[in-house]
Length: 194
Image 1 (cartoon, rainbow, N blue to C red):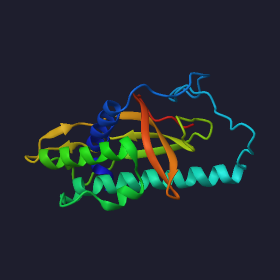
Image 2: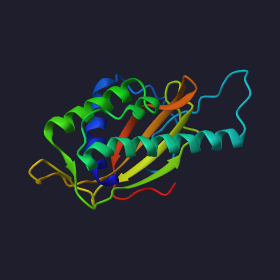
Image 3: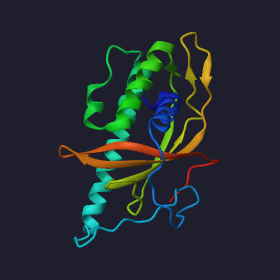
Protein backbone atom coordinates (compact mmCIF):
# COMPACT_ATOMS: atom_id res chain seq x y z
CA UNK A 1 0.00 0.00 0.00
CA UNK A 2 3.05 2.26 0.17
CA UNK A 3 3.33 2.54 -3.61
CA UNK A 4 1.76 5.95 -3.90
CA UNK A 5 3.51 7.79 -1.14
CA UNK A 6 5.79 9.69 -3.48
CA UNK A 7 3.30 12.07 -5.02
CA UNK A 8 0.99 12.33 -2.02
CA UNK A 9 3.86 13.44 0.18
CA UNK A 10 5.28 15.79 -2.46
CA UNK A 11 1.89 17.48 -2.90
CA UNK A 12 1.31 17.57 0.85
CA UNK A 13 4.73 19.04 1.55
CA UNK A 14 4.31 21.78 -1.02
CA UNK A 15 0.89 22.64 0.39
CA UNK A 16 2.08 22.65 4.02
CA UNK A 17 5.00 24.89 3.11
CA UNK A 18 2.64 27.29 1.37
CA UNK A 19 0.27 27.41 4.34
CA UNK A 20 2.86 28.33 6.94
CA UNK A 21 4.76 31.50 7.64
CA UNK A 22 8.25 31.41 9.09
CA UNK A 23 9.55 28.22 10.55
CA UNK A 24 9.08 28.93 14.26
CA UNK A 25 12.00 26.72 15.23
CA UNK A 26 14.63 28.25 17.44
CA UNK A 27 18.14 28.32 15.98
CA UNK A 28 20.66 26.22 17.82
CA UNK A 29 23.22 23.47 17.52
CA UNK A 30 22.96 21.11 14.59
CA UNK A 31 22.09 17.44 15.08
CA UNK A 32 22.75 14.58 12.61
CA UNK A 33 23.69 15.49 9.00
CA UNK A 34 20.08 15.32 7.83
CA UNK A 35 18.30 16.89 10.78
CA UNK A 36 17.29 20.46 11.41
CA UNK A 37 19.00 22.75 13.86
CA UNK A 38 16.90 23.49 16.91
CA UNK A 39 17.20 24.55 20.50
CA UNK A 40 15.66 22.30 23.08
CA UNK A 41 12.84 24.00 24.92
CA UNK A 42 12.92 23.11 28.58
CA UNK A 43 9.77 23.61 30.62
CA UNK A 44 10.23 26.18 33.33
CA UNK A 45 9.55 25.06 36.90
CA UNK A 46 7.96 21.80 35.81
CA UNK A 47 9.11 18.21 36.03
CA UNK A 48 10.66 16.73 32.89
CA UNK A 49 8.93 13.61 31.58
CA UNK A 50 10.55 10.28 32.41
CA UNK A 51 12.48 8.32 29.81
CA UNK A 52 9.61 5.82 29.65
CA UNK A 53 7.09 8.61 28.99
CA UNK A 54 9.24 10.01 26.19
CA UNK A 55 9.67 6.55 24.64
CA UNK A 56 5.93 5.91 24.80
CA UNK A 57 5.22 9.31 23.22
CA UNK A 58 7.71 8.59 20.40
CA UNK A 59 6.15 5.17 19.81
CA UNK A 60 2.69 6.73 19.61
CA UNK A 61 3.99 9.43 17.23
CA UNK A 62 5.44 6.75 14.95
CA UNK A 63 2.17 4.81 15.01
CA UNK A 64 0.26 8.00 14.06
CA UNK A 65 2.71 8.83 11.27
CA UNK A 66 2.72 5.35 9.72
CA UNK A 67 -1.06 5.05 9.94
CA UNK A 68 -1.53 8.46 8.31
CA UNK A 69 0.76 7.38 5.45
CA UNK A 70 -1.31 4.20 4.99
CA UNK A 71 -4.58 6.12 4.93
CA UNK A 72 -3.26 8.80 2.55
CA UNK A 73 -2.05 6.06 0.20
CA UNK A 74 -5.27 4.07 0.20
CA UNK A 75 -7.19 6.13 -2.41
CA UNK A 76 -4.18 6.14 -4.74
CA UNK A 77 -3.61 2.41 -4.46
CA UNK A 78 -7.27 1.39 -4.55
CA UNK A 79 -8.60 4.10 -6.87
CA UNK A 80 -11.36 4.78 -4.34
CA UNK A 81 -11.63 8.57 -4.11
CA UNK A 82 -15.26 8.49 -2.93
CA UNK A 83 -14.32 10.27 0.32
CA UNK A 84 -11.34 11.62 2.20
CA UNK A 85 -10.39 8.91 4.73
CA UNK A 86 -12.28 9.98 7.90
CA UNK A 87 -9.71 8.41 10.26
CA UNK A 88 -7.16 11.01 9.11
CA UNK A 89 -9.15 13.62 11.06
CA UNK A 90 -8.17 11.66 14.20
CA UNK A 91 -4.46 11.69 13.27
CA UNK A 92 -3.88 15.12 11.68
CA UNK A 93 -4.75 18.68 12.59
CA UNK A 94 -4.25 22.31 11.57
CA UNK A 95 -2.33 23.17 8.41
CA UNK A 96 -1.21 19.58 7.99
CA UNK A 97 -4.80 18.32 7.88
CA UNK A 98 -5.77 21.10 5.45
CA UNK A 99 -2.84 20.23 3.18
CA UNK A 100 -3.67 16.50 3.34
CA UNK A 101 -7.24 17.19 2.21
CA UNK A 102 -5.98 19.43 -0.62
CA UNK A 103 -3.54 16.69 -1.68
CA UNK A 104 -6.40 14.17 -1.78
CA UNK A 105 -8.47 16.49 -3.98
CA UNK A 106 -5.54 17.22 -6.30
CA UNK A 107 -4.80 13.52 -6.81
CA UNK A 108 -8.50 12.78 -7.30
CA UNK A 109 -8.94 15.50 -9.94
CA UNK A 110 -5.72 14.57 -11.76
CA UNK A 111 -6.48 10.84 -11.75
CA UNK A 112 -3.14 9.91 -10.19
CA UNK A 113 -2.50 6.35 -9.08
CA UNK A 114 0.28 4.43 -7.43
CA UNK A 115 2.25 2.07 -9.60
CA UNK A 116 1.03 -1.51 -9.07
CA UNK A 117 3.23 -3.82 -6.98
CA UNK A 118 5.68 -1.13 -5.91
CA UNK A 119 6.53 -0.06 -2.40
CA UNK A 120 8.05 3.14 -1.05
CA UNK A 121 10.44 2.64 1.84
CA UNK A 122 9.91 4.74 4.97
CA UNK A 123 12.27 4.83 7.93
CA UNK A 124 11.54 6.79 11.09
CA UNK A 125 13.96 8.18 13.66
CA UNK A 126 12.66 9.57 16.99
CA UNK A 127 13.89 13.11 17.75
CA UNK A 128 13.00 13.62 21.45
CA UNK A 129 15.09 16.83 21.72
CA UNK A 130 13.65 18.51 18.62
CA UNK A 131 10.73 20.91 19.10
CA UNK A 132 8.67 23.23 16.92
CA UNK A 133 6.26 25.72 18.49
CA UNK A 134 4.29 23.74 21.11
CA UNK A 135 5.10 20.24 19.83
CA UNK A 136 5.46 17.40 22.31
CA UNK A 137 7.05 14.89 19.91
CA UNK A 138 9.09 15.01 16.72
CA UNK A 139 10.14 12.36 14.23
CA UNK A 140 12.51 12.46 11.31
CA UNK A 141 11.05 10.36 8.50
CA UNK A 142 13.01 9.36 5.43
CA UNK A 143 10.97 8.38 2.41
CA UNK A 144 12.53 6.57 -0.55
CA UNK A 145 10.05 6.53 -3.43
CA UNK A 146 12.45 5.62 -6.25
CA UNK A 147 10.90 2.14 -6.55
CA UNK A 148 7.33 3.47 -6.35
CA UNK A 149 6.57 5.76 -9.30
CA UNK A 150 3.32 7.72 -9.47
CA UNK A 151 1.20 7.30 -12.62
CA UNK A 152 -1.46 9.45 -14.24
CA UNK A 153 -4.78 8.04 -15.46
CA UNK A 154 -3.21 6.93 -18.77
CA UNK A 155 -0.38 5.08 -17.00
CA UNK A 156 2.34 7.65 -17.73
CA UNK A 157 4.85 8.30 -14.95
CA UNK A 158 4.26 11.70 -13.30
CA UNK A 159 6.79 11.21 -10.48
CA UNK A 160 9.77 8.88 -10.66
CA UNK A 161 10.44 9.29 -6.97
CA UNK A 162 13.33 10.44 -4.84
CA UNK A 163 14.76 10.15 -1.33
CA UNK A 164 13.98 12.87 1.19
CA UNK A 165 13.87 13.52 4.89
CA UNK A 166 11.31 15.59 6.74
CA UNK A 167 10.68 16.47 10.38
CA UNK A 168 7.12 15.74 11.56
CA UNK A 169 5.82 17.49 14.68
CA UNK A 170 3.07 16.25 16.99
CA UNK A 171 0.99 17.65 19.81
CA UNK A 172 -2.03 16.46 21.75
CA UNK A 173 -5.52 17.45 20.66
CA UNK A 174 -8.59 16.21 22.53
CA UNK A 175 -6.53 13.50 24.21
CA UNK A 176 -4.89 12.21 21.02
CA UNK A 177 -1.42 12.83 19.64
CA UNK A 178 -1.71 14.35 16.15
CA UNK A 179 0.60 15.59 13.41
CA UNK A 180 0.17 19.34 13.10
CA UNK A 181 3.05 20.25 10.79
CA UNK A 182 5.98 18.88 8.81
CA UNK A 183 9.08 20.97 8.18
CA UNK A 184 12.47 21.18 6.57
CA UNK A 185 12.15 18.76 3.69
CA UNK A 186 15.55 17.92 2.23
CA UNK A 187 16.41 15.67 -0.68
CA UNK A 188 19.21 13.32 0.36
CA UNK A 189 21.30 10.61 -1.34
CA UNK A 190 20.28 7.96 1.19
CA UNK A 191 18.28 7.64 4.39
CA UNK A 192 20.14 8.43 7.63
CA UNK A 193 20.42 5.79 10.32
CA UNK A 194 20.24 8.13 13.36
